[in-house]
Image (cartoon, rainbow, N blue to C red):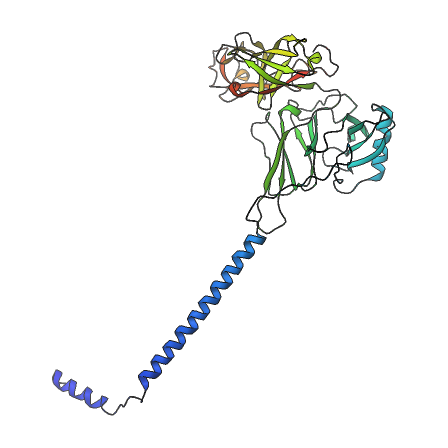
Length: 430
């Protein structure tokens, strides 16, 4: 082509024989309208499916209000709970015979089991029974055995039955759950906690404030209504927290905590905790009202779950009150040691804080690092390590040539409203 004019003429000549189909434009418009209608119908159907899926998810997946735990009705003075798992009838008979022989008030009648199982991974056999004693009083009993005791089932605790209306979990925390009756474990991790929750609970979790870093597991992983957990010898029911969780049997449903309570108590020979309510306070002391005032003596320790509150310095039996020197008061002092490294020393209140002093110097083994837990022996316990109570943590590392270090108290003393006073199991002086 020699010019643009010639190119245009040739293209026009080529296009001239092509004739458009009659009604072509109308056909194109009708087809486009049909496509648009189909797309709207498809989009509407998809939206309806999405809405249906979302509604189903809200019903099935577990959104909405938290699950409500319905307590079984009481069985007279007893907890109307079903047993946990399969019940070994032979073990129930063996436990009942032991209960009748060495328990208080046998023979026992109307005996039924919450737990009766063999071959537990930690305690060989476990039985938890409720029944009437010969006086017609409802009782609750815990039994355990272990290989070191030739697998003989032994009675560990014999208590009045708990309130069948308000009780959500029953528990036993003690270093006396293996070996002969009354014997304290010689294992540093010889305290065991047994907890049995009410029906409907899918997971029970037990934790203790004496442990700094513990693997408490995922509450979303069901454990059932029974849990057995091992702790250091310093652990007691008073430093133990038991939580119950419910997870509905629905896809992706969330686990919900339905209760959190303190441990019930220890074995029959353990130190006993007497509850007291704070009725007066000063900067240095608190006064607590105690119903079981006859068991309280000067020198006994007052505790909460987080640790030590103070020591009893006066008892007024007539008024039913005990006066307690707080750990930060200038009247408070006593022996202490670090929890894991066992560095010896003593603690003393300064009026505003607590100091650990008289720490040996000159050796690497007497190092106290920032954050180290410092505990005080309980005079009502058999030795310095069983039931030792947390006083506080080192606020900073102790200098190599220093014999003291300041502590941060374990308990927020400005918000204490109730305490447990650790008393002798026999009711005498500690």
